[in-house]
Length: 329
Image 1 (cartoon, rainbow, N blue to C red):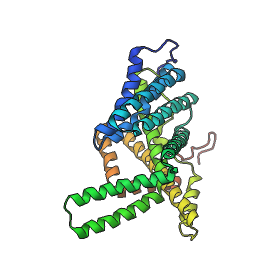
Image 2: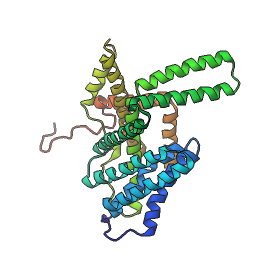
Image 3: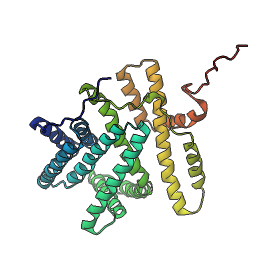
Image 4: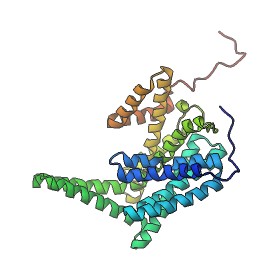
């Protein structure tokens, strides 16, 4: 690992300003201009702020953050996409937060946990501010957005010329879907935030290596495992689903979704261990990951592998070593 390049004390140069602000705005605009994959590309917006903060320091990056927010405001005014301002604010702050976490040299689990909590807090504040203009609370804003999205989907479906009976069935399905999403929205928000944090943390590593910046040492990711005590949370949440007390069941459902998602990443760590062990080439690894994401049964299987690894030790990394000095029988 190369020596860490300390944040520069020199004034920012034009190419550094354009590099950070331009890249961030291009990533944000991808969510508007590129169909299907554009929103996923925009999730990388924290990366230029993270890189710049580690390279130049937080104070310089705060200035670039202000410039980016102002520029996104101008673009939002021309494109009539006001969400660009809120996304720029949210993702730029996440980049600054992750740079500070990197300096503290926390573990990958703590990094993702703290980053997720802070990103969710920022998101709720942004929703609250946006809701003030309409006189709505954060939850009402979410429900309204879901309703508008599903109504738009139903309208497009009816324009295709589908049979009225099938269109009615589709409307009923959308109603059930809306209720289901509203039920687990807190856990979905947490998982989406965790994914954004994890994605930017993972992709920052090769970028930092290429630019000769200190790469966060998270240890061997193929040996990561979830806390052992977490299994009791799964058991408690599972039993709570059978209770008649509705608020407790709501908490249990959301807790179960989050816990099983953590076990999914535990299972991916097991998979990565064996991919590394047998030196599977990168192109084949991408195929394996894509297959898992496309097949729901495989997602469940990976999560179960993470859960049962607590007892089965599928990687054989917890086997006790023979004590030194003990006589061999």
